[in-house]
Image (cartoon, rainbow, N blue to C red; front, side):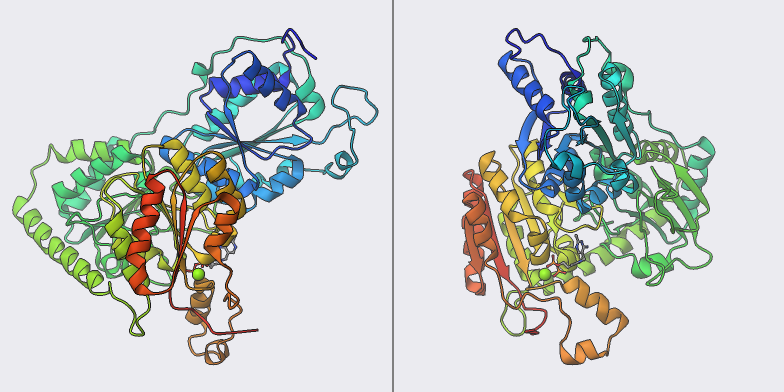
Length: 576
Ligand SMILES: Cc1ncc(C[n+]2csc(CCOP(=O)(O)OP(=O)(O)O)c2C)c(N)n1
Ligand SMILES: [Mg+2]
C-alpha cells in the first residue's frame, strides 16, 4: 500500500486535470479497467484532495442522460466513465443524443490491458481481458463524437484532458471520447503544474457587418417576415435578444422541433410550433439555430422567399444528406448575432405605423391559436383522459420556474402548446432521437439545480427505454427527487402514426395489426417503486387525476421522487 500517499500515476493526473477543468461529477459504471482510477479516487479522498464526485449508475444510458441533463443547465461538461468496449456499447443511443444536441460530455473508457505475462503493472489477469480486446474500440463511437483519442502515456495525459474539454466546449459543442489501457493508467509520472486557463473554448464568431445590414434591411422591408428557431434558448441571454429584435420589427416566431425554451410562449408574437402556412406565406425567413426549420415533403417556403440562415453549424456538416437552400449562411453564435442585429436596427428609421399594424394582426393570430388550443382541454368523447386535459392539469401544479423535461413523443406538441414556458431554461426536449433520454436528463437537471422543481413528462415506451430500474435507484441513492408523469397510451404511437402517413387506408389499419402496443400492461410506476422507493401512483379515472398530481408534486417538494402513470386511450387492441 502507498502509505505515504506519494505514488502519482496517469490515473491521478487524469483525475487532477478533470478537477482543474471544472468537472464536478463522474457518472460511472466501472469495471476491471478502473483499479488505478478507483485507487486514485480513494487516495484523493484520504488526503482531502478535491476530485469530481462519482455517481454510481447501474446502466450506462442513464449515466449519459444524467451528464446531458446536468450540462443543459450548467453548460459544463461532466465525466461519463464506462467499461471498455462493452460499457461503451451500452451507451447506445444516449451518445447519439448528446452529439445531435451538441452537448459537451467527457466520456472515458478503459482499453483492455496490452500485456499478458505481467510485463507491466496492470497486465491481464482475467479471461475477460482477452474478450474485450477489439480492433477499434474508439470506432464504436466515432460517428457520434467530435474527437476521440487513446492516452498512450501519463506524461501528457493532463494536456489530453485539457484538449478534450476544450474541443467539447467549442462550438459546435459535443461529446469527446478518451480511452487508456490499464498499464498506461498505472504508469508513474512526475506531477506537473499546468495551466488549464490556457485551454479555453474557441471564441464566438460574429456576423460580418455586410451580413448584419443585409438581414436587417430585408426583414425591415418584408411584408410577411418570420423567424424560426429550435435551440437558440440554449443560451438564456439569446432569448432576451430575440424578444427585443422581434418586437422592434414585429416579426413572429415559430419554434420548430424545439428542444429548448426559445421565446416566451405567452408573448403575442409567438405563433406556435408548426411553420405550416406561416412558412409558405413568408417573403423573408430568418432561421436561427435549427436543424430542421421545415420538412420539405410537408411544407416549404415559396419560390420567391428570401431565407437567411444563422447557426453555429449552418451546413450541418455531420449530417450526410441535408440542405435548406438559403440566400446566405452565417456561422455565428446566435446571441451575439442577435445583439448585432439589435444594434443595427436601433440606428434605422423604421415604418412604425406598418410595424404597429403587423403587431396587432399577429397578436390576433396568437390569441386565436391559444383559444383553439384551450378548447381541446377536455376529456375524450368516451370520457377518458386526453393528453390535452392531462397537460392542462399538470399546468395547474407547476409554476413559472418549474423545469420540464418533455419526452412525450406524439404528445410533445400538445405539451408545448398546453404548458407554455415563459422563462428560459424551463423546457428541454431531446435534441437527438434515441428514446429513454428524459429520466436521466431529469436526474442530471435536479443535480445541477437542487432548488428547482423538475417535472419529467414521458411516453410509456420512452419510460421503459430509459431503464427505470437504474434511474430510480439512483434517484433514491443520491436523494435527487423529481416528478415523472407517464403519458401512457399503451404503446408506440409514433410508429403507428408514421405507418398511417404512408398507408392511410392499408391492411394494418383495417385489421388493427401494428405490433406496437403493450396489450399486457406492466405496472410502470411500481417498477420505479421497486427500484427506488418512489411514490407510485396510477391513474385510470379522470376524477382521480388532479388529486394524484397534487400529492405527487407534494411528495417531490418534500424530497421524494414520484411517478404517476396516467392511462390515456390505447392506440391498438392487437393481442398477439
Ligand atoms: C432507442 C430507440 N428505440 C426505438 C425508437 C423508435 N421509436 C420512435 S418513437 C417510438 C415510440 C415511443 O413510444 P412512447 O414513448 O410511448 O410515445 P408515443 O409514440 O406512444 O407517443 C419508437 C419505438 C427510437 N427512436 N429510439
Ligand atoms: Mg406510448
